[in-house]
Image (tube, rainbow, N blue to C red; front, top):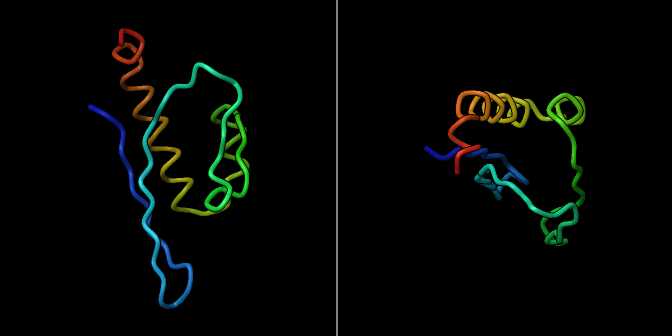
Length: 79
């Protein structure tokens, strides 16, 4: 099983945005962001990121991602 979660929110009264999140692993410490879509990013552990997230639906998503990792850690390490 793969982790996939969606968040939907309104940008304006007429514009709704749906974002799909997946978990991934990077071999590199540097990344290239899509500047027109992403204002900023931060590497951090679970506790650090939990403190930074401001939207409730994003916090719920982080908790679900952590549960998925905890429940599938052995399977993920074998791949």
